[in-house]
Length: 73
Image (tube, rainbow, N blue to C red; front, side, top):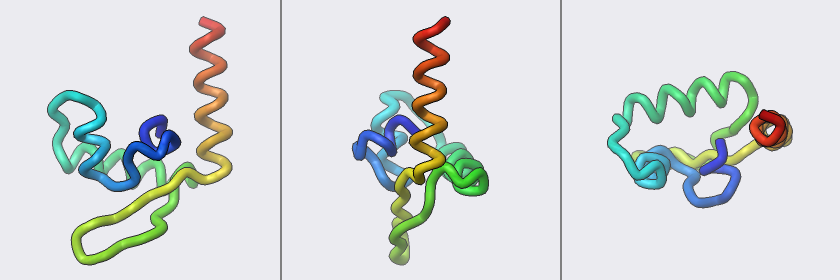
């Protein structure tokens, strides 16, 4: 979610590159699907090979709560 919220990556392949480590496409898309099911991100554009996602208001609120929790710990 952090990667998408920063606008660094809005589609599946870019998060793999942004993480700086080997992550399978299947793993990335599984996570994106779970975030989408929870209403934290939405698909806003899709062509034949690329799906682009963006954060929802609920997603930004959840990310902020996670940041606050990490700072607290």
